[in-house]
Image (cartoon, rainbow over all chains, first blue to last red; front, side):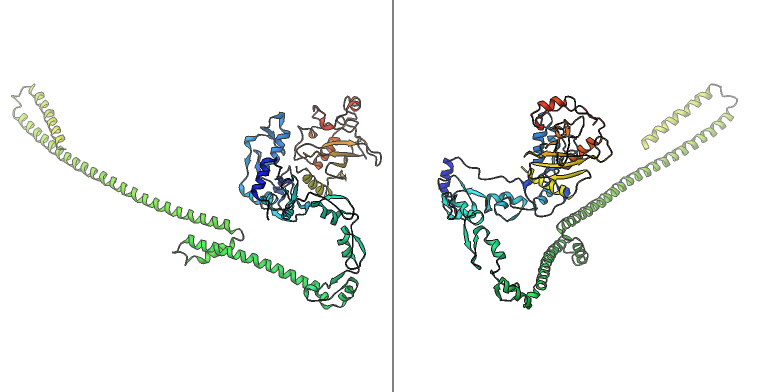
Length: 426
Length: 154
């Protein structure tokens, strides 16, 4: 599509006030072609959610719907707080949270008709692309007139005529004046005076009624209804009726049509199966990659079974399986670390107990030493007592009374010196 | 705005099914609709009577409440129901229809049901206080009148 040279249009824009070129499309005023779940319908605009947001009471609305509601019905003109339109629970604007992106994305994929359908555009587009379609592509949206000093707009499809379509022309039939851009539609659709003759029956018909007339004209020439399937009979409507009663192909038409439909359905099914198959194959190879070269000889049957279980949504299934795989790796890593830790603690415990055992044996040795010492002392004391007794028996007559205690004191002193010697030994 | 789209969807649903006692009358465009309501139980005030409601929608519907009034007709006979909140010129004093009570999730059907139950629950055979004077002097449209909602019993 060609336009006026860009420098010209730039100049013109800078001088003249810019007209609103882009008309924003309200997604809530669109007509939806694809079916959608009625639970995904906003209770305010009755459309699939557009930028769904969630209130603290878990009710969900379109962002723009709740904004509009806050603007107009805000209590006491403080738009920061509002009651939920559904349950009337109060909330603050700051409490509004957005919904998961996936929901908005799924709803943006719904097919809608072009908002300029009434002007003649028959396209069906995804909802998220409507604005772009209207702004950039739609043949029926209004754009600047290509003529340099014309301020009016033309339809995009008329741009290629490269001239101003706003000069007034007279309709040849009714003598009324119309802008050039509207003249054609006037003549073919609305003009009450324009007449033309039917190409078949030569009758004079209103130009705007010609299509209707041709459909019912008895003299109109049509091909046989089985023309698609090879019958090349062409005749006026009346003769055609007679022919269709005898034409073998015409009788087969319903059957052939059914066959065609079945064929089409089969092709579509085959196509979807092929797509599914390719998806499965890619997921299978990715399984093999994640399982690694060591296990891929043993595992293929199980992994292919998994892949066939996860029907069309296998990109998510694949993701989940990858996740599971990585989790499994993590678990094995953790268990290895755990066993290592276990070994280390056993070693530490063993070292500790060895040292304790050594200590115990040291102490045992000391105790044995002490016992020996004790034994020797006891025996020494015994010997001393025996000697005392014998001495006492000898000096029974001569010995004075105070000597006894002084001997008794000597024994503890020796014992003390003995115990100090024992300590140094230890 | 999306008022027309939403009203189109409401109309499609209304033409399919409506609760008992509510009937669709006409919707020539997306500006003004008419509905008929009846009281279903044996309330002697409204027995065997059908009342005609007129809905007027602004381009901001459903963000703004519709204007709902009872209208008087002679053929078929439609009167203004007697109720302490309904003036004899058909204007209804109901918080649901005011800016504060309205919620954009309401629709024509739910408004009809609310009015139906408002009539069902009423036992007083009287007009609102100051009815005559209000009817004589009021030139405002219902949406511009500032009602004070004080009675929560009906």
